[in-house]
Amino acid sequence: MTMQGVDWEESLNRPSQTMSTLAMVLGAWVALLTLINISIGAYSPGFKVLWIGFLSGDNTTSNVPHDGAGIVMDDMVFALIGVVLLALGSRGMKKSYDGGSIEWFRGLPSGPIASSLFTSKNGIRRVMASWMIVLGALFYLSWSFLNTTWVDPGVYAVMIILVSFGFGIHTLEDAA
Image 1 (cartoon, one colour):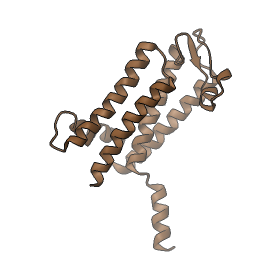
Image 2: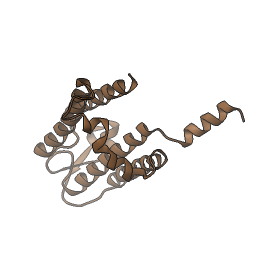
Image 3: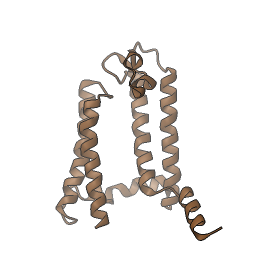
């Protein structure tokens, strides 16, 4: 096998740290939404999200009244997606860090995002980027908690812009 073939095969077996982090964050988010949907309904007060209809854009099958009936098939499928994402992220973290996911989680407070929240020693752009990420996450969590609707596309639009620009600025700073 040529050197190029070996590098290509190795890159498939060694996921990137960024993709592993993304999988962990998305998996945790999916798990949170699944728990909320099972317990109180994530669509709006008294309504449960049917994930297949919601993700496909079919408004007629995207929600049902939440009568405390518990788990439906959509909840199990969505929970399985969350577990798969967490497992893939954990597998990638195990290859990127000696201690795996636990070591990655312990390193978050000293990472570039958290360490740039209150000091500008790494540059003002990092401070702004870190606060964009925090404000985006806080906006989503506070709006969703106060209005008891966890799947509002308008809220997602605001949150995603703030968080993605924050991560993008950090990535540009790392590349410089």
